[in-house]
Amino acid sequence: MSKHKTKNVIFLVASVLITALALVTSAASGGESTVRSKLVIMAPASPGGGWDGFAREAQAAIKSDGISNNVQVVNVPGAGGTIGLSQFAQMHGRSDMLMVTGGVMIGAIELADSGTSLDDVTPIARLADDYAVIVVPGDSELKTLDDFVQAWKKNPGGTSIAGGSLGGIDHLLMGMAAREVGLDPQKMNYIPYSGGGEAITSVLSGTTTAAVSGYNELADQIETGSLRALAISSEERLSGVDVPTFKEGGVDASMANWRGYVAAPGITAEQKAELEQIVAEFHATDQWKDAVARNNWTDSYMVGEELDEFLTQEIATTKELVEGLGL
Image: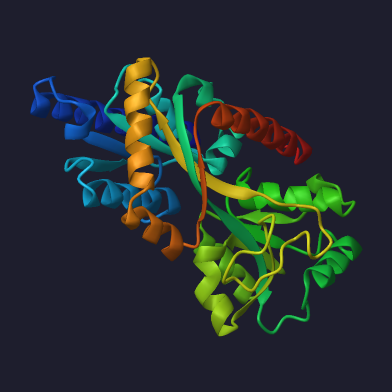
């Protein structure tokens, strides 16, 4: 099957799923329910991934405090979240839905040709960040970020880097790092994989020199010594995480894999305020605070004008990096 046909099939399946969901929730409520009596959270990714986990942590926090006892999570995977976004943007006026979004989606939007962006939905809140880490095998001769940079500058093509999809956080981070150390980002030997597990397998097998992925995905292997962490993408060192930042290693690069929520287009100001209130309430629960701690997230709660300004800057930065990578 061609890529074009595959994409059409995925869109059709997602469309049927969301349409069915709309009919089910509407019928169950008789069209009269409030947001708190039924809430749907869309994770625009497959079950088990970062966005799915983020949605289910919110679901648990909402239920734990009785904010709503009827919270469903639905998965619409594909294309860095842009398939889910395209479907969600068609849910005009659906005030009983939230969708997970984040930095990965902004990069994917820049690469997609669907014509749908975050301008087509309603921003609600940024909640938490996690960070990417660059690693090498535990027995690698590269002991520090500076060692890696020197090898990288000496032989950019031969210093291969495994990571997530093209235009994702891993790719953008290393493009930023390349620019900061005087390398042409387009000459970087970046090898994309569909998941962090495949990227780590490549570096452990010696197929690639280094790998970049979320710290949480690699924490156990870093602690056992099978992987050596050279740097993490946070602005400052994370509490309880003994990994230096890129900036400490002399590379002025930082990037958060932030996550938050958007609502459907066409909702009223009152409906938006209600959804913001629901997010504020579950953000304050002990269940959510525990989730932040367990996942080594950084609380980055942000709403309103501050969120709008952040998104404007984030989109501009991402667009510049994507163009610099020649994508």
